[in-house]
Length: 186
Image (tube, rainbow, N blue to C red):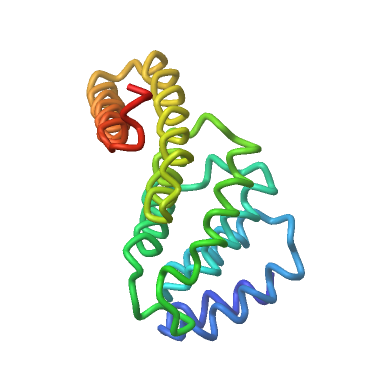
């Protein structure tokens, strides 16, 4: 925990690169602590370190902490890759992390298939990579996960949000079916 404490000190002083180095060491010494990986993820997000964020999300998945994966974080990382955002931590652009993110989604969905937002963002990535058939399949899986979650929701406000997400999923699937190469499937 000493490395994590040092990372927290550097982070509070705005020395994020040093904080990242300390958290790397903290995680190396305590690979089974989801708290360490969650802290590492937070620092990497501040640094716009896509590779580090994906690494932390994968470790959280390994530790059976998929409930700690935030839709906002997964979405920001996906959109940075899809939109080929520049100015990232290692001097790369988003597209450079496309294969790593695709591999993470594949890994995650083999272990946890009920998170609709994961299927949605993987579909976005696949679509951007030109993988239309896989994107459509991910949309169908998003649809199944969203429907299952929808029936469990008791809060009317949250139900409305979930219903809107399901509608967006179906609209994206419909748009895919309108593409010429999918016309025969409709």
